[in-house]
Image 1: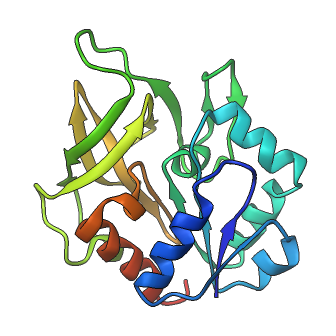
Image 2: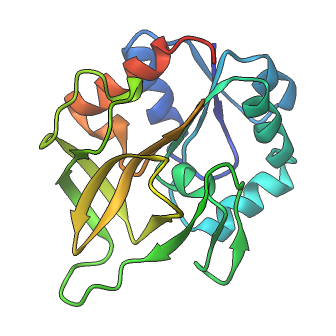
Length: 203
């Protein structure tokens, strides 16, 4: 069973439906006991970094997520959920993140680009990863974001995307993964990624 974490950041049931479409069994929950009993965990989300961390804090889920990761469960962060995996963000003022991956969440600032980035953009694979099995460089995913993850070092980088700057669109380290785009809206590519996540062996 996969726990889809409910921390007030929306987009939960579309993610749950997408997981079940590719054969996963999932539940939307903010219950620590359910999350810690789950086989895998998904942290979805849309909105601002500060609000997301506040939602996790109010529901006492920050340490629960860290405990789940430390126990070896696979974690997938989606969109805002991916950003929350990192150390910090300046969105709406400085906010500490979960600190599961090294880096900072910063705004797009390239002159002439539309912010937020909304729509389809290409993935460039930077290294092999089981989360991207069956996906090739040049395939498209659906994005909707104004901030991106500035990695500290290249170790977590799995795939990148260009939008005025080249940013990390898929990241991963050991049993922690993140995608900046919305797999539940990314048709074939999104279905493959979610199926890969569902089928990952226990870390």
